[in-house]
Image (cartoon, rainbow, N blue to C red; front, side, top):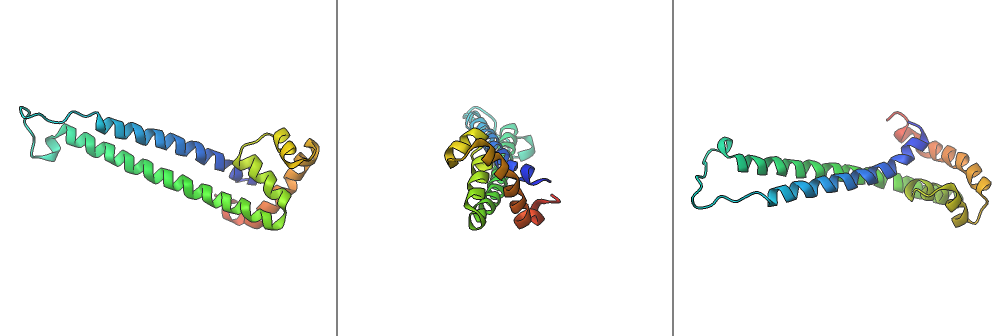
Length: 144
């Protein structure tokens, strides 16, 4: 995996969290919308014959699975964030450039304005910043 692809995963994980949170909310709403048995309904004592109980179990499994996915994405984002923050010790401009580009998703013009640099300077800083990041952390993601 390239350094750019690895760093770009930060925003992908953000989108995945939104997706899984939405799916989790839908599953929770589905459980909440199930009709409770009334006094006239026959309640099954055997779980295999209880369609509502089986739906609740399925929804609970879905919610658990979505929670695991959300935690996994957050852990991966935390790792990338921590690595980008460590770049500050090496070079403040590299840190800002990588944080603005890959965490905040800013375009080159906006980054140049935020850093009070010219557009060409910012784009030329990108390659050395990526090279330094790869030198520091490449072994963690290169073969992922």
